[in-house]
Image: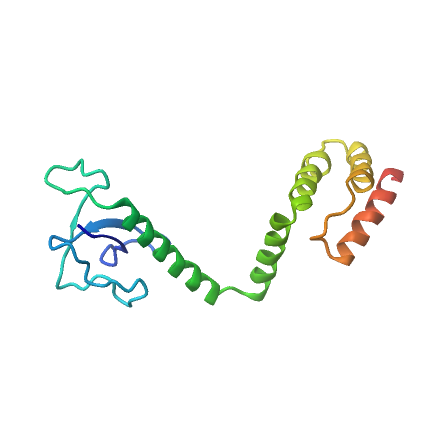
Length: 161
């Protein structure tokens, strides 16, 4: 028995709310094998809902692998649609976040910066921690030249104020 995940296009809800339903077809073949089809669920072949574990009375069990593949295809479409309307500022912000995550020292530095400097209740101690962090840990590769300059300058000047 084939399984599909599709957006429930007939549901009347706000644009931000998307409901997914796991669906199975009585004849075992889904009407749209192409995950990028404009309408993955033709109205002429109405599915009936089933549970993943087959626990619902009278409903057969569906293949979790097939269900997972459909979920990945739906999310891929969402990501493609989101990237198509992404602004330049959002793209830069995403790239910067990815650089932090991909740099092994970046995550560690960011966590220590937030925990020791940004969250500190006393400014004098936060300034000392910034100076110590810049000296001890060095600056991670994801930082640009200007950010490196500002952190180095801040690490040197902050304790004097």
